[in-house]
Image 1: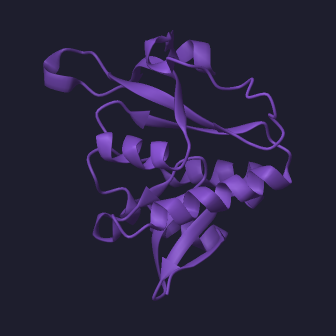
Image 2 (image 1 turned 45 degrees about the vertical axis):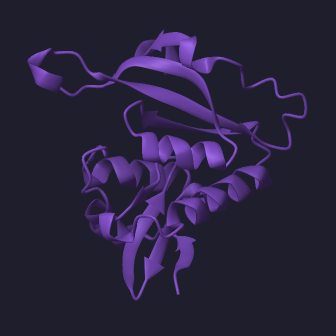
Length: 165
């Protein structure tokens, strides 16, 4: 039975095993440590039989062998619940525009595209020196009663990465 729990520092050495699919960015341990130090209450992992098979820090990842088992859904809901407790307006995430499986999952959870971030992923696709666009997808939380932080037709609203951060 899978268990969702908060990430501990020792867990950071085991997260990259979840990042083995082609849609996933890999980061060094300092990236994860920075998140753990800043937002420990928003950093969860999913453990099965003593092995970390998924995690979420505003970046959900599930080991390829554990895809399609509903674990990303469990992790996403855990993050949303934690954000509700902190009175956040919304939860957002970035997903490659080509990752149709993930987009379908997030839409089934109530997320919608807020904007397209042009060339967000810095892959050199086909030698073009052009990256892949990301969809910034959001779900409003209870604090956003009037849905002020989502928009219609977000796929047509183009921004650069500099506009996002």
